[in-house]
Image (tube, rainbow, N blue to C red):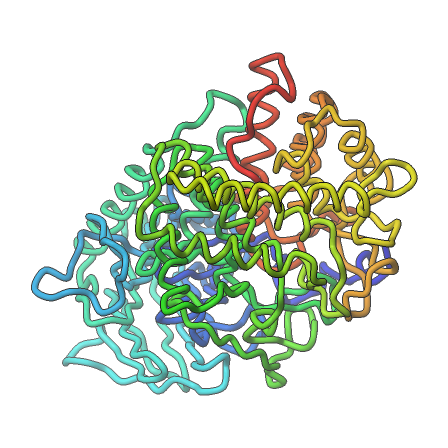
Length: 632
């Protein structure tokens, strides 16, 4: 690992550590709140829209802070149990404050006409398009400060506020989206922002609400407190649907499930890879991508993280999102915008300095044009597990699934960019071949379930052919599966082989591969995707260990019977969790800092799978003898 990952003057940085952000969601919008009480990242009206608060990527690009005037480091922060609502406790020299933040959920509101955004069946609760912040003084007296400075279009257009009505309690700013701030404070318009300050004494309450739709925002403290309670009840009802083991690791499973739910986009069923863009995989490096989109692979795997814990309703919505995407014969893309749009053009934003000066700051993602052959297998495997548990398949989905299997059959012999979306030359990646086998194998099983024996026989024959070729060309002289044909390089994606049941866990090639990755593709025991000096990924510089790969290793170790080693690895990985039990994409093992976009769906789904592998193996005392509940 290079010094670039270890010698940064973190303590002097004006940017909070990535892991110190809190994540809020109403399943239509998301935001990140820094420890100092400032909302530093928020995109409206959708998660992939231009941002209105962008301080996370440039300290002058707009934020929204509520907290003590003269304190920036809170005494404590936590999620309200079973929710995506954050509580921050402040101790000052003169008193104590408690601030609660939430993106509000309320009863379904389109009573007289249909929603213009929802393509999936609405539930009883829906987003109220309101960021609500309440504050209570619980001891002594504290000077409270509120600053709201949105800057539209990724920090390019300053807001211009105006008062509504005769008092101070309602203001409006027009931009890419119309923002409305309601409060019982007395904000003044100063430059591009709103500022308010008041002294609170024990027992005092105040609220500030920022909304962006025609839905009525709270205008009184009583209304604000009622909406907080309603939002809390929504999350309590949702988390109660899950099935969590009575185990010390339960809180990590619940937090991961809530995070995955928060990364869903309820109107279409899309599931974000992460809430952010351009957070660097290497400090000051160029590996800075926009992850605010629905990757088909990540989404299908993430749904099975939820499914493992008893949440299966989100799977139905996403499968219909896939059906919408493939309507009119369109081939399945690697990723989509959350509304299902197909184009995600990539560009850089040179006016933003970047997190810790990491540049370029990229918006959009050119990988949507890539060929990644694993995507067909990811979809087919998730649909197969879903259908098998119900012994049925939605009839309308079958033509779309047949199309994906036929795509795998037509292209499996071609090189591609692989699961890691390398920007070098296409290669014959072993994991891509295996996922094409998954597409054909699961397709054959679904065809039998759907009573289509001709398709089943044809696809199974081709699946067997792919299987034989991978076993002949994808294994080196040591009996270890390698990254690509003709190479001896290792790749963490090969840990999927036992999880996908490509070969039995007892097969010596599987065991040799898992142990080789554990010994040779790790830094301080955590797993790299690949060695950058062995892989043409089209980029320069190094990267941290990929946390999903480390969780994959834990699950794979259970599969080959190394339960004690897997448990120790899980314990270590859970110790790296953020203070709020969230994970970014990577971990720098030298500093323990999180790197990359945040929070990362792929990491949280892998946590669920690895933790459940260990728990079930220890309960059954028969490691490797159970079927994993999800594939990733």
